Amino acid sequence: MNTTQVEGNWNEQKGKLKQKFAVLTDNDLMFEEGKKDEMFGKIQIKLGKTKEELELLIKSL
Image 1 (cartoon, rainbow, N blue to C red):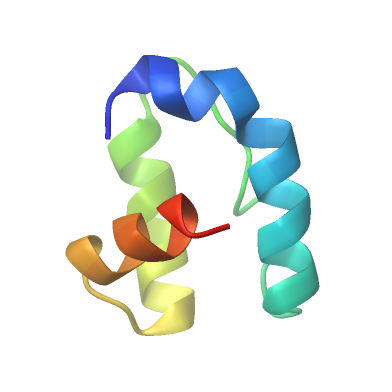
Image 2: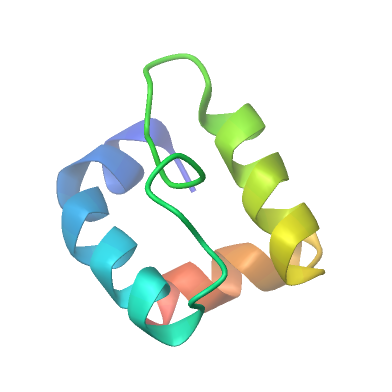
């Protein structure tokens, strides 16, 4: 998943992730340029998912 894909519809995906996983906070889902990997790492830890599982999850939203 590239940065453009994430930026393009991140607000929509962020809302869906928060609905599906109440454990995620706004801080966990804050997209900052150049820190995409750090953000995904936080989400992976909270959800107990691999990077591949997380990417598939986000694509399916």
